[in-house]
Amino acid sequence: MSATVFYATAGMGRKVMGQALVAKDGFSARYDLDRRRGVFVRPEHKLAGESYVGRVLVLDAAKGGVATAWMLHEMTARGIVPAALVLNAVNPIMVQGAALADFTMISGFDVDVTRAIPNGATVEVDPTGERPFIRIV
Amino acid sequence: MKLTDEEDAMRAGELGPAAQWAIEHQIKVGEYLGAVDMVPVTQAHIMADTESLGVSGVEWLERMAGLPIAQLQVRIPTITDPRGTDFAAAHRLKQQPWMLDLERRAIAAFEALGVLMTNTCINYQTIMPPVLGEHVAYGDTGVVIYSNSVCGARSNFEGGPSALSAGLTGRTPRYGYHLDERRAATLVIDVGFTPRALDEWGALGGIVGRLAGDYWQVPALVGIDRVPSSDEMKHFGAALASYGSVALFHMIGITPEAQRIADVVNPGETLPTHEIGEADIRAFQTSCAREIDAVDVVVFSAPQLSLVEMRQLAGLLDGRHASIPLLAVTSPQVKPDADRMGLTARIEAAGGMVLSGMCFYQSYAREMAEANGWKRLATNSAKLVNILGGYGYKPALLSMEACIEAACAGGRIGQ
Image (cartoon, rainbow over all chains, first blue to last red; front, side, top):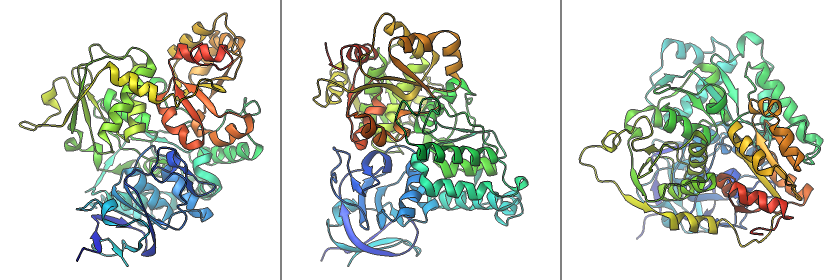
């Protein structure tokens, strides 16, 4: 039986549940998103055209510049925002942005989390314990 | 994290609520990223255009700026990245009054905090370049990668909230590129063609960035056959940081921490090695043309232009006339010199628009596109090409000369 719980090395925020939106691609709020409409718009992005609102984003690595540190806060204030971010690799900007916005994020797995979580699966993300995790419900 | 007595006092609120918020933010970030303690920093640089901040971010700044003055001033020199507008030219860009109002509110809040409104992403060329080994807290990825790599300073990417925190506390969590062990190379790039034009340096940065792939990779380049200029390093680094989220590179025999490859590769370690030649640069440039044969606007920005680039641009435009909008974006430090030396007048006599203190992609690029009917854009900045796809543009990467040819030919490329 395949595993349904995947542990991360770090996490912050609160426990959330939602539908996973998964791609082997990066994440940058400035480079990839139309934040007014809540969709991925960068033409080369594997999720181009998809709405991220309320979804648990499961992606490979944090990309791009420093703007995401403010933009997660701005997106959260308007409510046009993912439910959580689950990344194989973070950069400091994503951590700083999640810290300001009080946003749920976990990262660092011993598997490729974008292969482990099926797109569309209902998942629980819990960053609150000693070992943050994502679980397929 | 291990805290000093002073840091404990900040955390307890003894230095006021601004420092208390800042140190709590830094602890949260530091613990996530494995920092053991804090490191004192000498300068901070804040990226905080209002498109990124939004109304909620500006209100957040205003709440902090409303504290009693003794409780809110930054403790170290703290400067700013470009704003979201050039107030003198906002009407020509068709920016909306609400954008300018938001900018004015953000500026007032930063000034109350004691921040110096330098509004530049080329502070390493114009304000105070950091020195070898200096720990700083810089925002703007181009600033960080240049300062780390070319100057040998030590900074992580510090987003606006974290750079402001560093300004308020005078320190930052000690992780990433503040640590010796993180500054070793993780991949080697064997360069068989040393770029000549700035767009070629950007293309090389883009290719290396894609190969590197994430923030924790440190490319070491071998084979660069001359010492690049500051502007060449600027375009290379900005593109590398943009495409790869990379914060540090070494050029063997050129950058200060890598006089020999053994300086940045641990003994006995074999690193992944990639070869890049002229054909790769050309293929990258072609891939950034996006199958367009004409453009609506030409933009020189990202990073802001140095005085040397302004002079080059003015020289290429002498006796010509741009028949589509041509924007040249520089810093508030360079602009008065460009005015005094007649460069601004020469660019504007040829139909160009010189802008100061903003950067194109940080200035409501989507709204400017809609208001001005701009869809297809030519630039010599690989970084700008990488960003603008997400704002709905079809960008083309061309040399400065080819950009000007297009601007003077009604936007047609290759005429």
